[in-house]
Image (cartoon, rainbow, N blue to C red; front, side, top):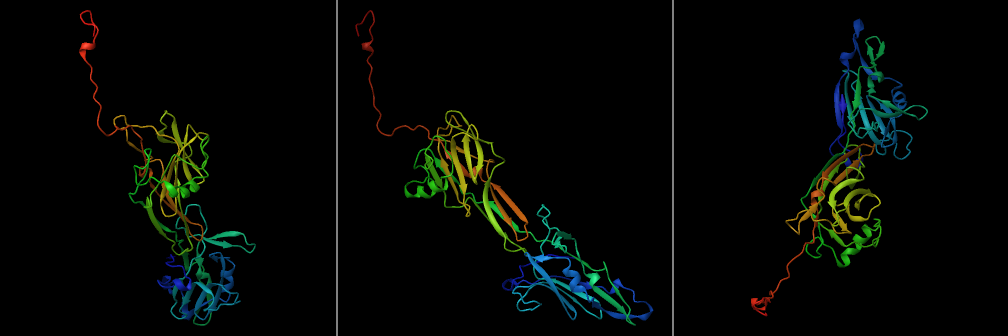
Length: 380
């Protein structure tokens, strides 16, 4: 059967309850003429399991048999033996010595093999006597159970009761909020434009961007929106203590941004220590702009050079990085499974062109007199 833990197993989290499978091993044995006797755990049940070298959250799992119950636990405080009030219970297996009914309860995670696919695999991480890692595909509890007939003859049920434990992986969600961040080359035209003291944290955020020929601490324009561009979340699952990282991604360094400078040079994208930088003509070129995201999903933009107007009919058109840049939320749980979700946010990053405008106010009228034209008939 499969058991997929539904909670972390620490005392404060034992609210939902363990994952449970149950059944009977009665049908696995034919008692013969001597009739039914009963079922019990083998005398070496604990040591047999101990030899597998299984772990939970990196802690060695120990085993104890008390009557009809086998308990797997991690020794929390060096108690040198199973103490219910101190040790962290990982799973229990109870066996009715008369009927052969069993119940397996999984209270906490078992560490699984990192197969590189971050999938819900069933391979447990074990260790041999030398401490080398080995894979354990299932727990053969049948080999720990002895069936005894009416006159005391016993047989172990090897292979007749195997429980596979499915790895739990994080559940991750991420979506765009519809918020945008706009840099307007005409300063002060957008609510996202940042000036005054508000520039200071943005200067620090982008201070690592090498500008080649520009002041390394200042950009022409900065923009920031307090409204997050993306929102998301995650559930760690049974393999608790997951940690999350929100970052920006591009298809690859050197990706064409689709934008160009005013004088016609193409701008290419590069991931530089988590900041996406648009560089003129390639990796060694001047920084045209830079984009950053924080843990709250808030996006900041710095613009260093003027960007080409793509629309000849609209001198104040908006240009974006649509389909060129994404936000990515990666969540890694306690035994190394990583689940990633991403969403395109390029369309939420706007660059507004600085087009010419007509000066407001009264126009000036100039007069020209045809009589001023010099001809053969007129001196003008």
